[in-house]
Image (cartoon, rainbow, N blue to C red; front, side, top):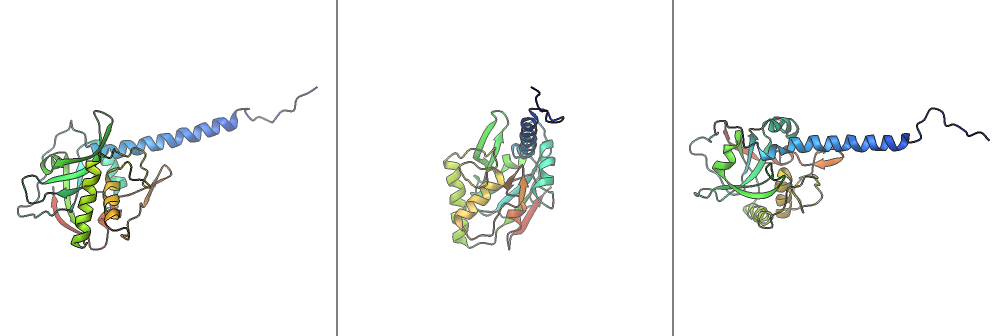
Length: 221
């Protein structure tokens, strides 16, 4: 009895192809994670601390963007927005007081975890090469709800979203935190994740900074 041969195909060819596809997706995801770890901003490097012009007035709910000091920040900057100026974003709180702070979410490079945190403005800027303040054109009631939603995520200690799953707010990456808080404040806002990475839709900085009426209020270089 003779066995039929299936040409030159490897008997495990289909499995190998599936494995290769899986590995490729994992590599893409890991690459994006390395880029997004710009949100952790490499504590080891030290640059001058950027400062906003004298007289700059911050308001609760202003968006603050920065370009971090790590080399990962330069990678993510190219993916984050069309202007390629920043790698990270947060929300200003307690403006006009000695407690002026930024609520944002980032990976903790020392533990490999991380999540939504409240950091002083000076500390946030200390890990920056440049920064910008952007003011949303929204009713005061919506801005108040936006700020409360961001604080709620912080109080709940929502962890960093390493999966970049924009469909759930159980975990949050930096732009997702801002988008989720805004959509809790007003579900009709035109905010949708516009970039695709490793098969997932991800919020970019443009999805937030290009909202109608949003203005750049100050730059720090």
